Image (cartoon, rainbow, N blue to C red; front, side, top):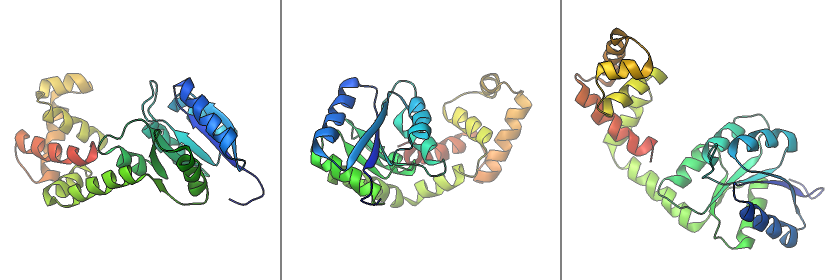
Length: 225
């Protein structure tokens, strides 16, 4: 960013009071930041980001139609995408990591001091990241916990070798579904399910459904945490 124009900001939240509050913080607290628009859900945010071309987006996590993590992932996959700060009332374990992996430049709580939010907007517009101390500690602890367990790392690597359909079958096995139930759920034949199971066992280097479930369960700790 240069000093020639203000930072263009868009707010995404399904709570109108939150949008109004954040808008007031920007309007009365920062001359170098311009609010160019707002959206009420992830899907609308994707469309508005193309039209408004903001420099930075403040993105809520929990929204009814599309959550902020998925919206962040989709927006950041586009050429010339804006920087995104995920801003939420929740600080659940793993949430900061999910946001960063989706492409967010920062993760802050809505309870942060207004000046901290404004400074974060400026930081990400300048190409820097933004994490509050609490969320940063959570993310580091979460990553360290994963990295410290070689079984989890190995399980994640194995699960990532699966095709999308193989992952669906593996997840269904882990949920305790029979071949017939899996076939019905995925609209395929029993023979197709068996073929996928054979492929999964070969990739995992195991025999039997239970070991498939064990590996998938270990991987979910990291992939879904």
